Length: 125
Image 1 (cartoon, rainbow, N blue to C red):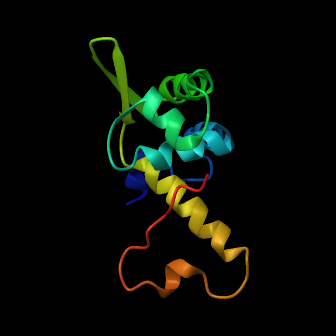
Image 2 (cartoon, one colour):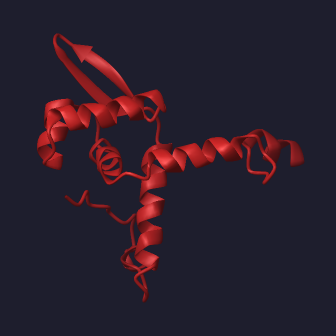
């Protein structure tokens, strides 16, 4: 059992603690969080993301480049268009959990505790 914990990096002395801090730093930007929320349902082109986030394509591209370097997203090229998608389910789960935690900070019973099924997270503009 102890070996499993260390391999997964959940021990407070794990080498992954500093990397986890970098993950949180990457998510400490509203535009990047919104991009991850927008990519939960599948891949999208920069222009689609920019329009849905009400941001310029150049701004979205800069954020996507950072997310790609951090391996949050991956790409697929089709002609001249580049499509982005989440690398795995963990980024989406981290953002969902952060939003759920934010709901707790408002006091009372959070909305996600009222739902009988998986709560839906909306990408706020």
